[in-house]
Image (cartoon, rainbow, N blue to C red; front, top):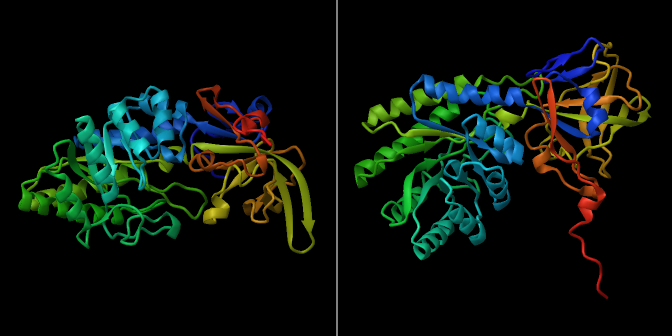
Length: 435
């Protein structure tokens, strides 16, 4: 069994995380519950940050908070000296509520509204990543009216395809995100921005996909973007000061996955950018990256309580848990694979193959299609590993199921980070019929 971060097995045969028994966590906070190993988050964050420092390269490591957004996680990110990127007014609100330094907030998104851009300008955030021509005109109008300067990056698609699932590949030419580098769109965007009185163009951003296990694609993307920076310097005397290479660093979900350490990704990025900058005689830009999943993905474990069983003779043995696609849509959406264990019986022999089904009214609501476990009893606690990214953040109230509690653990301490959603919570925005 692969254990993540601070996970251990106690003398009672229970799974512990951060020095806290998960069986006790399930009793205190109920299930389903997301348990976050904050020490692992810190370890990963420092792996990225310290590699840049070691290489004496000016950088920002921005937590891509779409992976998991909550006040407490923004506060941990701040403690670790990270920046953050947000992709909506709601994420921006949460970061501001957490007291996150506004100058270290970057705002992404392919369809930012007037209200969201105004909110970002009011907050005087650090940077807006511009995604399309519509947004250029909106920002020009808003900043001109307010006579307010704002740092911006141009998001480009470098035409690099990462080896990943089609739904989570964003750097190829046919993408809803950004300006294409090869068809002249990026050049048009540059011309519209580089001499603007209020929009202060700092450089470019690209993101080539998610769950990437090699560095070659990042290096190729860096080469293409730095080449374009050099071209703009030669033609327009424009000196780009920021190169944002995005995120997408992979994690281990199952034994089939072979992620790299943060330092490996960063080292290769630095080498690629330095090589191109030297070749074209330009200053080394400040390098920004945006790890999200690689900070919180395997730091998160979901605890469920097992309920019903169903045997389909000669076909399948089902166990059902008290959550499902309402707290983890990824198996249904991406065919994502997970591993798990019985948290209250970690040392027992693995004897039976099960399919773990959720409680939602969809036949595709399955958390794990095929997993070998001890003989499972109703009331057992199932731990599903590596659910920290895009679990809670993509959770829904389908079937009027409340979103789970989120609990942080570290050094033997535990605390509620997001309370469980009650029936009252779900109904609080409903309005009774007037006629």
